[in-house]
Length: 434
Image 1 (cartoon, rainbow, N blue to C red):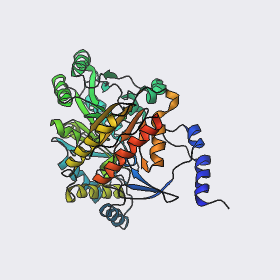
Image 2: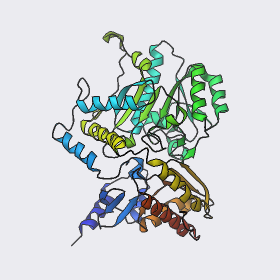
Image 3: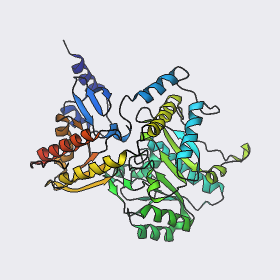
Image 4: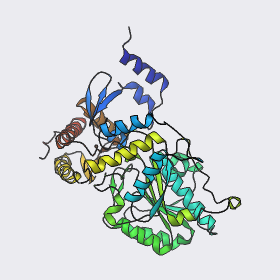
């Protein structure tokens, strides 16, 4: 008789199509099927335990099955699971909006909900475009983004993306954008000098370009981009889907350089990794640009069925309460320092060309391997056999553990990753730094 695990494997291979996955390769491998979780660990259908080294795709913040968030979701279930926000409202959405406005950089006063990072950035793009149109400036139709940018997978967010592997195939579907060299303020200044009166907004991932392989911008770059936008009268969109909610050591990455954008895009960690929820925050000036009589048609005609879902908002409120109750940000400093020390030995491995880190965001770049070797994927498989989940972006191995991961587990995660890199590349693993 077929076991429960075997039946799941069969049905997965026969029915599912996984994201960012070459299914031919997937079907040739034994899948890991997660059944439950606790804290920083995932447990598969056969009872094996794994450190969640990527926060379940960068969204888990306080660990799995946190009692505070579990309780908040259960409590909301006893009230209402979903109610539309088109023409209605509900307490969790209102309370969360107030919290987000109070926590975010100064000047951001309005919250527009959606359900994932792609839609959060798409909303910011559409708002910026429409805002200029409603001011009577129809020249401003262009956007500036950074080379190797990633802002999501919808057509608008892909248009401002710059990762050829992901985006080049869809070029005929996309609108044209201008691309600046990451971290190069002079290049941004050049583009704005040449095209400033045509540009609606600049969109950036503050400090770190995540999906590009954890590319880190030089100190002061974000502040300079803000100043250049102000000088040329251009709006600034900060996409903090990946870097927000403590990932860089502060609640929002913009805080490191005291930058207030015109739009702030949030998702991933907002609910602690529990439920899909995103938000696009805007200034009062942007909001007022959409006010008018019904017949003026200045409304922002955009929305989603699950916009501001009550369960997700309840989870997000609880997630923010845990930040305060457990002093999560205050306790991050020693962990970030420990992680930096541990990574020193990883950087010495022969196959490692560079280690990039901001807060608890890490990219370990491997060099000298052919595309068909899939060396990043081989590291992932080896780490899995050793009891840790990591994920590659090409030949860059990504570590992004939950903010709640203990120092002991951080040591184990880095040591396991070093061993996996050594094994996959034919090197000898070095002992992790204390």
